[in-house]
Image (tube, rainbow, N blue to C red; front, side, top):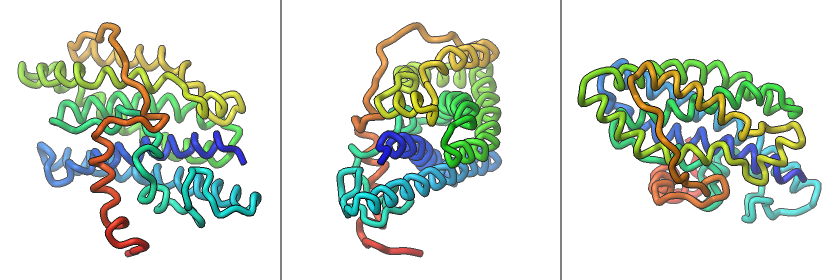
Length: 267
């Protein structure tokens, strides 16, 4: 069993699922109809990516159980016959491996846009490298997802510029969003054990090498948006290892309600 591959795949899935769930909160509440549809479609893209990663993780878990003749999931619980649904709806908060950035609340349109921009810029760089993974399934998911993320990045970049170089209020809202979210960006580029092992085995990506190109891309957009690049600050970490902010608990309460209330229900 390659536990690091399972954990790495779950990390990728959790990032997409939680951000997709966050963005979906805008459905029917967007500032204008066109952007309401845009953010909802981005949510669907992210949840679709999560499904692909969860399906692969479930396959890895089930294959591992068959080889070991065990009914105990390598996740630490009873997940006999793991599926994309059980991985999304039946894991607890400490079992999720998403970075802290994606679970932060929407607050307003500016914070939603900036969160998406930060993550999309990272994800775009990540998927470009992940296409070269020795794991054919991860490489295929990365290639498919990159087309969607290219749009996510273009869309969010344009909005950062539009708000940053817009009115006095929109500029201030972007400054507030930077103050709130910047502290969660450092974690993305600090690899944890399963990321390091996946990178060493040429399965995953060495995220520490993505930090400099990510910062350069962010600086370019911030310059056009008349926003100052933040000074160094203390970075919050822990999400990749299951140590989350209280926000994730509220997300999972809503996300997992139906499955918890009516176990095994299907459409």
